[in-house]
Image (tube, chains in turn green, brown):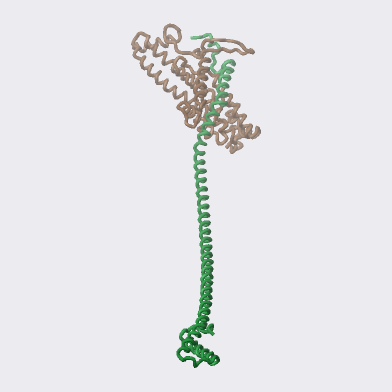
Length: 187
Length: 275
């Protein structure tokens, strides 16, 4: 045992040198711990907390985004549907209009065709009546002449007789025919 | 007289005579021969085996902490987890829970204290070192004085010098008559007894622990070599040395913990006005 060092052997009175060395030793440790070790651990703690909270936040954000997108799609869909309905309505209305126009046009056309046909018919009839009137007169006179002979050669009487005969003929024909317009035009 | 009793007698006799008998460890145990001695600015420095042990302990705990925290990540490695557990014990268990909401800024200092004391204490059972630098009064004294400076400074900063010293001298809610007794006790308590007990508690625990281990270890060897019937007591001494070693493990951790918790308690009193 070392008795030499024990001369200052009051354990509660340490030499100043020992205190200084101890202080320096602790200071070095405290410096490294405070400057490097603790900040590094704290950073890991913060990162860990953020990884948990941030994960939740990110998930929430993604959910909100998805919801917003869905909302947007729905709105767009509704808009498109409305637009389609509008277009359909417009098309229907337009079709109706076109149909109406076409109908009117066709009616007009048919009316025109009918009118023209009637006109032609009237003209032909008039022509035929006119021709017939001349021919009937001649034929009748011829026939009568042949039947009666030369007794009816007197011009004046002959023409009066023919006219009367024709008038009678007209009067007979008119009720039988039933068409006033035709009978009218015959006069 | 049985032979064991005579052996005990010879042991006791050897104490005085300094002969071949049992050499009980003395205070000299803590004053090993200096490895290097020098004088700087009139202060004598003696680098002894214990100084070196203190450096090794500090370097080892620093290496551990730096390695554990160097690549601190979200998912900790085994080493990082170990370091984090130690730091969390101080940060959450002491800085946050004992000091309170204002406690977190003190966590780095408290962690430094805790790890420094733990590492130096641990040297008392590390083979070949087997003495704690904390069993010399210098180191606990340094730490206690640092703590004393810190909590007084924090108290003055947080509460103002007037209020801090007034609250320390005249605790609120004490009847005026009792102040004759209370004021000296309180002042003594806050400014003298606290740092003194803080240092002595740590020092004395490590000092006594080392002495016990040495007594039983030397006793084991001595009884084995004594050459008479007392040999049969050697295993008992050895068992006691073993038991004391386990006890020492408890003391190592407990004293580091107690020192740090008490520091946190004193800081709590400084941060918050007296209750």
